[in-house]
Length: 460
Image (cartoon, rainbow, N blue to C red; front, side, top):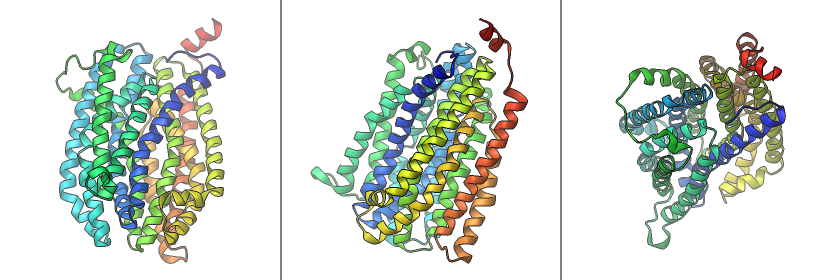
């Protein structure tokens, strides 16, 4: 990354960082997307089972990987302040944190998976598929978490194109393995939806190996000599990572776990409703990759500018990022409205599931606008290392407003399952409003106004 002076230069640099992140996020999400859609074409029980398994796994992964996202603003600010010698030590400590979290989640999963699935009162076959899918996926937890740290390191340097290429390399491997293991082609065992779990786990090992090789051999990453030595555990650095990362992880967990909670309530409905809800939610989450990618790009550029004490530049990046996110959300909403039946057809050939999925997708339209505001602001605040309010707002908007409203609407009105979606929309809107006020306050009190670097630049 480099210092920029005009809005045109800022837009160019933001897009150079953003586009690879967006492609990477879409490709990473596509692994889950293809797990779900390819399982759905095996049969509807596998669609429901994989969707249930994914709905339980995604909040756990995104919440814990959110903790590791604390590394990104730390490294971005170190690079911006020209303290590059501290970067390798921070990354290695992040890897230690990742390994510890992966081990913890495997142990916890061993004890709680059966009771959670039993409590959902699913069809026996759906429950079996969900459990075995998650067990298969667990073989990829360690490489996935370590790769997340390496990816945050690569991205924090502004080299987002590298992670894009790694993920694009991995996606066809995942699809090919799904083709072999779900449907039993070319002599491989026909595992149905469970096969997609093994396919994804193998893919995670592939992307870890490739990322490690690139960091070891290729510039500019090789200049940091990341794997030359492994320092001992430093809890002071863990504390710094966790101080920033835990609020990020909790805010992401509260956001994603609400969807898992809704899925638990949805288990009271028939298999067609569960499958339709999960298919529509899967596509809505796919579209969410756009504002999420903008959020991640803003964390990088704002962290870099903040580290260099260019506060006005950080503020200008904020406006550009939010404006672009809102524009893209309007485009996505229009596309989803006019092509919702075609989108539903991606997931299933079952006419009943298809029709119901198209109906759910109408509600997904309203997710777009709220996400376009709240996600970029989250990224901006993380770039400033202002993370605690985001976590509190996520708790209130989803668990105090969204879920209770959804439960009441679903159980005490004629909206039925659609009531949960209206509750989620309400929570998203509340989050967007609260975060908007926080950003305005933060920039007014802490970040607006010139400083030495800005003044020197403007008089140069």
